[in-house]
Amino acid sequence: MMTNLFSIFDPSTQIMNLSLNWLSTMLIFILLPTMYWMNPTRHMTMLNLINNTLKKEFSTLLGISHFSGSTLMMLSLFIFIIMNNSMGLFPYIFTATSHPMLTVSLAFPLWMTLMMYGWFNNTMHMLAHLVPQGTPPALTVFMVCIESISNIIRPLTLAVRLAANMIAGHLLMTLLGNQGPSANMISLPLIITTQIALITLETAVAMIQAYVFAVLVTLYISETTYVNT
Image (tube, rainbow, N blue to C red; front, side, top):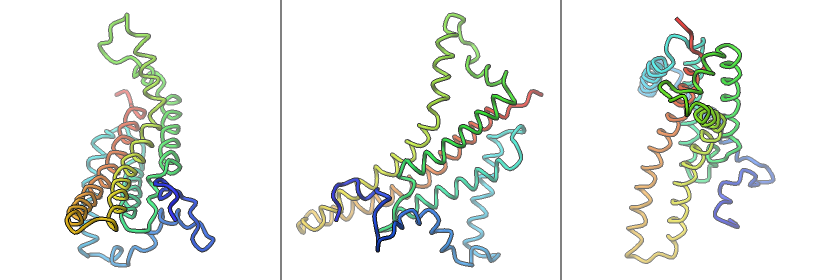
């Protein structure tokens, strides 16, 4: 029984004395049929098209100074997030990306690694980023403080953005779904139509948030892997 509205996002829910909610993070990869690995198929062709398009875009954002394997890492991150976002749209499957435990676990290590890499290898470039070009001398101290705070809160903004966007739509669908049993014949079609629209919107949000997360991390990589040519 649901004790409160947010208990649907509780990863400790017990099913047959086992906590299986976090299994959803890898469930899609376990259930991927063999047709995704057999070439050529329509599914594999579509997946390759998406991968090639994203690879070109990530490579453009990273520039020539990115380290080896960064594009593959961003593609893997995008696929992992979009799979978890999409799995959460199915009934009775826990949306792992709606929980801060997972989003912070993704954002903080990436941010910390990039910061350490940037400050150790491109110290002058990282210092130059603290004072944007064209800043008046009188505002230099304030800009350093603002840019430092902006860099520090990056993992928080990455994690909260992904979790909040996934939670918001699911809460709306839950609120509307709870009205179904008590709805009359006049309001029931409206509720069903709204639910279909929300599911369509959540499908788009699932793809957009995975893309935004991967692109922002890509931009952070491009800032820390600058090479002076």
